[in-house]
Length: 236
Image 1 (cartoon, rainbow, N blue to C red):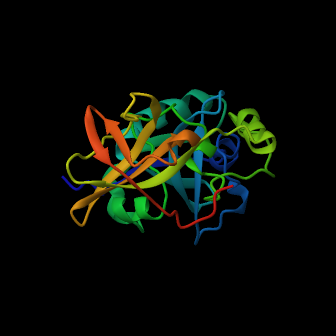
Image 2 (image 1 turned 135 degrees about the vertical axis):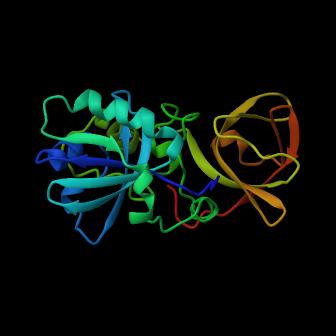
Image 3 (image 1 turned 60 degrees about the vertical axis):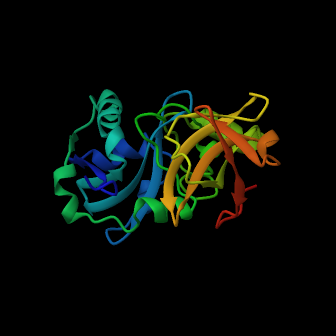
């Protein structure tokens, strides 16, 4: 199985763009047919259900690329809100060859771009994943599901946990959603994604500010030396 395969969700029908604009953090009204726009769909409490890259095929059809494990959750959530709109939403992941991804999983991680999986859906608000720094969020568009929580975190600066890029020995490959502790068994955060790179492991993890000076962490009873790597973008 190719771990870099992506899931695809199609929205088709005359209300598709209007419907999705009211559900996601990015401003789809700015999307052009030759562009890709990244965003997230959140719960009413502002927790990220799934992340996506959107392509506008034509005025009545959009395709969202996302992690394959979360396609079912994404479909269920979108369909719940779509009942009053003229749009059909379906899994077209079998057409992935028609919509090739520009980045593989390791490249995405090294770019500081998270993936939400079935294990991490509904765990993080967008700013915890640095989505504000990655331009997944428009703070100028109209209302969308979860907007109040996302806007409050932005304007009041209440984000106490942020995503960091880490380097670990290849003794253990952390899995999304696993808890991270320090040597005193104090909770530090949560694994977002991890990939093997040149006999080591690179990882994205949402961590509390108290974790920044750690040189050792514990994941699933594994004591691991850790080094913080720079992100290729600025985080407030």
